[in-house]
Amino acid sequence: MSVEVTKVETTVNAEEDVENTATDATAPAATGEEVKKQKKPKPNNKKLRQAEAAAKKATDGENSETVNAVANGESKEEAENATNEGDKKSAPKKKNKNKNKGGNKKVQTDPPSIPIAELFPDGQFPEGEILQHPTPKDLPDDRTAKDRFTSEEKRALDRMHNDIYQELRQAAEAHRQTRQYMQRYIKPGMTMIQICEELENTARRLIGENGLEAGLAFPTGCSLNHCAAHYTPNAGDTTVLQYDDVCKIDFGTHIKGRIIDCAFTLTFNNKYDKLLQAVKEATNTGIKEAGIDVRLCDVGAAIQEVMESYELELDGKTYPIKSIRNLNGHSISPYRIHSGKTVPIVKGGESTRMEENEFYAIETFGSTGRGLVHDDMDCSHYMKNFDAPFVPLRLQSSKQLLGTINKHFGTLAFCKRWLDRAGATKYQMALKDLCDKGVVEAYPPLCDIRGCYTAQYEHTIMLRPSCKEIVSRGEDY
Image 1: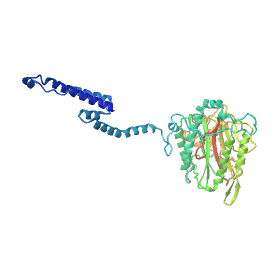
Image 2: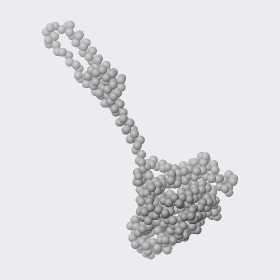
Image 3: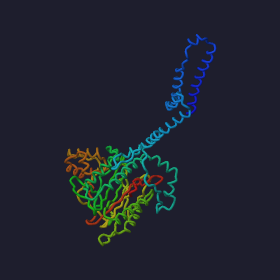
């Protein structure tokens, strides 16, 4: 800055010297008459304007005040001081501009409404909890997964499947933000339909619902008390959540068929804390025991041992907490919530082993009742049979309903409320016809004995080649 100002001052002084020299040189030689005729020399305004323009152009207009001050006869120091003061005034503007550039990242609203894809525009979604694979108890030799965490070969396999992992992590983040909002939203006195619709609308916004490319993986389960699973209200259901209820919230999200199956139990009365603690610890035990080459029966035995070490005291009576032996976790594949393998929650299950790059829902159910569930109440959950062969349909209404199911749900689970939302009408007979022919499978609510209480916790895990990722893990559970 000082170099540019000095140049202008030197130019102005040089012009004045030239003019003075010209005047002094002509004065002695002129006669009286010539002096009268001689015109007084005028400052070379054209050269001065050119000097000013050059200075302005060199400084891009930033130091125009300094140049003008020098040209008007002010000192160089005064001009520089004035320029420095101007720079200080303009400094905060530059700072704010940089701050705005760094603040372009979107922040989720409350209640959440911004799709997860917009919160992470680079396509890199948060990882879940990372654990090493355990050493299978029945394989004491080198056929274990203990060295996978540091194996470069296994890390390379991880990178090959990164696109799949990112899809599952995106669905998991939508699930996390939805459930954390719902934990604040749900209060006693709300109807179960109100709760389910708020949850499903929120999840649809966050996942960026787009046909079968992205959306909800199955209806919202909100089973109460002795009902352990597969209850969601049908249209007209007036059930209201009570202060003493034990409510299991089980819902799923998916991206391109990559499903997150995750659940938690919600209570308002602290007297059920031991029940929730038992089921949560049992689920975490199952997650810890699961891994590549681990037998499914070993996972079930570990879960039962932890679950049944708890008991619950209610109204002066003590109840042992039992694992519900005919409910279990399961493997997951694209667009198929139950893909063949089951993870028991009691001992004595199958000796089938978990394998690399499989996805599992590790879920446990605890009960103060018999520890055995049966079908009860009106059915609300349905799902098209993944392996159903072609069956000729005679009823036109059945063909139309099957077309609606294929378009909106494919082989993902659905409920009657969702059929209403899709525009289907008078479908009861057609739905029964599809179930009778084995095209669609009905999943009625599963209940223990009346008067008992059941709880559920569930997470989705990925058995990556190098490690085990609890992809749905959150700060809440």
